[in-house]
Length: 111
Length: 115
Image 1: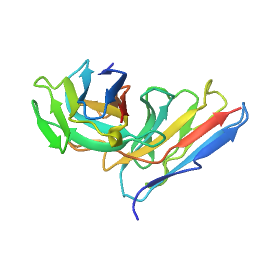
Image 2 (image 1 turned 90 degrees about the horizontal axis):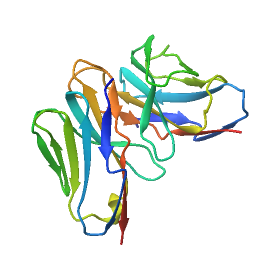
Image 3 (image 1 turned 60 degrees about the horizontal axis):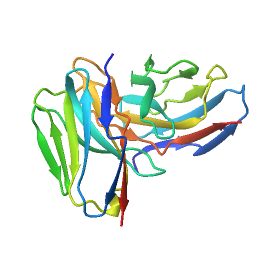
């Protein structure tokens, strides 16, 4: 079945450093979504990518969807303590209904 | 004030008891979902419903049951058959199950502890 792998599992950075998390699917995706979950909270939708090679930016966050629509990345420039949390990718298989979540990357930011 | 609510926030039960977790949404969404999250883990799909009176098993449905009698409500019952029920349970909804855009809105979650 469809699998969505996400790396790294954890990342510790100094405030001001950049951060990237990567997501890879075993199958071609119709779309990929990114969510953020703060410690003790629930996942909150950040963005959805649909087109091959798509790049979207939200302030310091840059999201990319691979040309083959099987991988994606989230890059944060100059991290801040407010970026702390777990970032999940979630991909939907082409022709399917279920959205499969990656295991998440937990980001720790040291001030 | 639109949103998705789950109650209670914390729930304690004795082993062998069934327990029902509530999930209500007033977003007029057709699709609803239940996920389980274990410490340091991602989200695993238990059940989902694309429309009222219809639902399908997710990846870890064993030991759980659901109903979808109303569009707004999607309660989850954790039965005594679930071997390791202690976890954080998240309910979510989306406008529809299909379609190009199906962002999910999550409730605050219920943390279930079985003693």
